[in-house]
Length: 212
Image 1: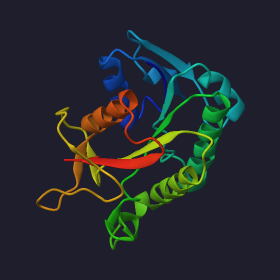
Image 2: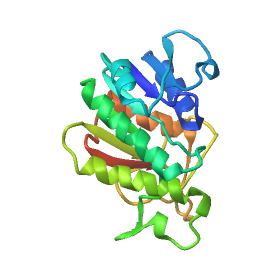
Image 3: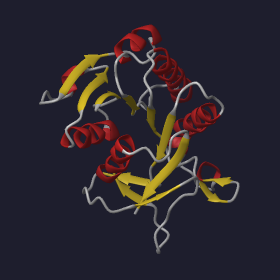
């Protein structure tokens, strides 16, 4: 497939890039710093700015799908910056008539009990709150619109550099935990779940989650 990957040089984005290339897809990496992406077969690197909707719309034309690993977590005002970027990506994908938009989501919007989000749980880390609130708002916006087909993949509560096992569970809006109450997924297996969804859509216009 011909894919545009926004944020291809980041923690999750780079894993998505590796997984997509390993399956023979043609990936255009849209990044702010192209020098951070190693050149290899089936990859094109393009300098982009997610806040420039007009530019992004032009850059996204002709793709079969857009995968967004944009987070904005390194910015000073994370919540506002993330939502500006999210709105721009959503609009640009729609304007470019790209059929599908797949987004990297967070675990904080998952329920730990009916009606209770992980974000609202006691002891939720303050340093992740702004990012989590941004993802929560983005998910609400996606669910409230019908102009763009989308999929939102939330990881487990802990996502870490590890191994690609290809063995994990998929869920819906509830945080998945193992028999010991842990919620974990390697970034490599998260990427497997995302590219699986790219190749064989099962959660169009839905959020789903992945964990061991």
